[in-house]
Image (cartoon, rainbow, N blue to C red; front, side, top):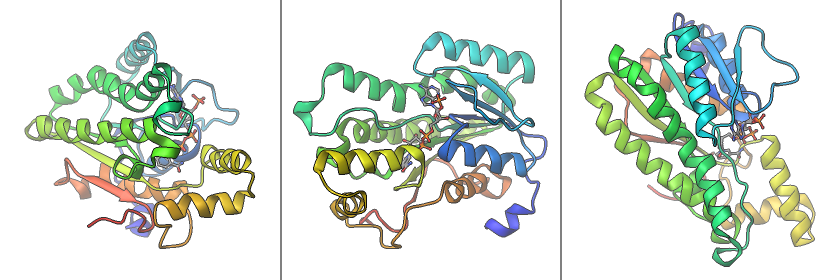
Length: 264
Ligand SMILES: NC(=O)c1ccc[n+]([C@@H]2O[C@H](COP(=O)([O-])OP(=O)(O)OC[C@H]3O[C@@H](n4cnc5c(N)ncnc54)[C@H](OP(=O)(O)O)[C@@H]3O)[C@@H](O)[C@H]2O)c1
């Protein structure tokens, strides 16, 4: 899949928006779709230090409805809509420690970031895809959505589980309207927040980072392949899913986790 697609400009003529496309997984996706020939729009709260000049950058905090409206207006005015929407914004911000450690504010901010940001953007950008009877939407979820770790990421896992459910429902609603909707669920992926999360867990447990990683992974049965994913590996899957080669795929969740999720 990877080598063949690397030489393939199969997204030429397509316009893609990658939310949170300045760092980690989103950055790798933006780079990958650009190489495949797409015109890529990237959004984030902060302008990246080094930006890819072939991309169009729009500043927007997707937890703020007014900023989503502004982002949509700019896209519609400058590009007349998009063909590919990668809802990548998300992350773990709530504290660990189980149900009693989480306030209403923690729950609300985790749901805003991991669930409502995507729902809101879909609502704004889908009408033009439906009008054109063509488009692909990807929701970047997490294997935590199917495998909660109550003491580590309760609110995050719940918001990703809700995202999985919403994504499936949306796919069913749009299946006969020419718009495909898919979910990609990474396991542990080597990005700056993942590295920081491991460091913080190590500091709060008073153990070295390497041991903290082993401890965290052992709670989920470990990673059978013995390593975290590279962001580019997630991007490679996303590229395939948005490409014409995946024309019959909709409504499914793709885990990319080195074999971590211990379910059939
Ligand atoms: N890394 C992992 O191990 C892992 C595993 C499973 C799932 N995931 C999921 O993969 C996705 C990307 O994670 P990542 O680790 O690559 O994250 P990351 O490196 O922290 O990048 C997050 C991106 O989103 C932007 N962003 C954050 N909050 C935003 C907001 N409120 N509005 C607009 N943009 C915002 C950031 O830029 P600014 O800060 O400038 O806004 C950045 O571009 C998330 O949905 C995450 O839940 C990650």
